[in-house]
Length: 441
Image (cartoon, rainbow, N blue to C red; front, side, top):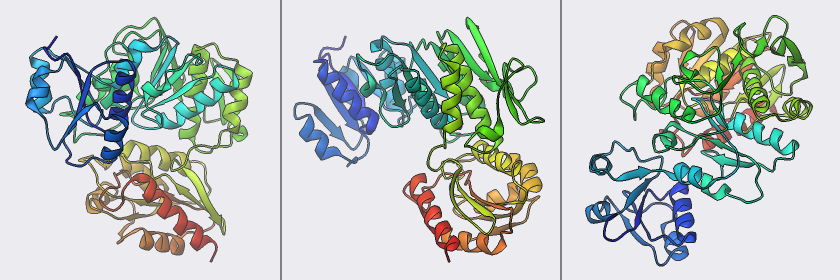
């Protein structure tokens, strides 16, 4: 242990603040730093923790060297040279989820994937609540993991990002799942293989692995005691039967797609994963089925926000990568009588947009592309008619002019929002307000 014997929290975002709160509650000596000069909420943090030394504007080498361990926020890469040096020197570098895993005493469900993890985590929480489990739900979604620790909880369900998994070593979940894997965060990882390897860490020490039979990158690379698969593949344990529009469990009919409040095959896959996890936890199936049938989804995730003249408008602003847009475009395109008018674009994060080529050709009436990487996106969707537009106002106006009865207008950007908006939420809210406006003209 270093002479000063303190923990150093790196990053003062939501998770970093939760770590400071947790450690001080435990009576542990702690210091904190942030490479930003003025991170949001700094003054409030100083007031809440007047005895915690806080440094901003960069790494503080003396603190880095003397700390007994580093607790790194997900937004800070362990590969950052100042942190990597400490790893090489043998210092323990962990994250908030690792602290949670060491403290939690009740079963944990760990959920990751390039897309849909918030939806699945939320829906699983509702199923567990209906079954009387008093679950703690959070992680990358909403409440930080450490703030979920509660003597009354009988189950925890955490949405986990690849960034969080990088600094987690003893998760040992009762059930772990990778829902899907597509290109994302290639501005942080050296390769797609490195990104997949980070996701695969979720299976370390788990009892049951739930994986997507249609996406072999989600299959556990190492042995686990039990596996349950879901997907449209004929060998999936929990299967989407597209021919008969129903969900099956090992050949047994569970429900018809028409019984679901959500539309689209991608949403059916999300529901299958929740049913598979519920099975792994031995939750009451009747209560699980009743809960998934009533679920209407989350804001900014294929959310129906307006409808007029036979045209439906969907806000899928959370789709910040190609895989998410591919799922939304295919899921909606397969279930409507008309065509899709897609509004997309933003910061592309170095992604390959070519996987959108075939579904764009098959389902699009038009692609309306905006933002920093709109021209690159247009190249990836060259098989479909695309137009470059200036902003959301122009995109919605043009979509309104092009749409025909039976069509769907879909905001599913495949890109980050930060070139034009403060967040995907602000982008989705802008689209939704404008869609409602044109529908009520």
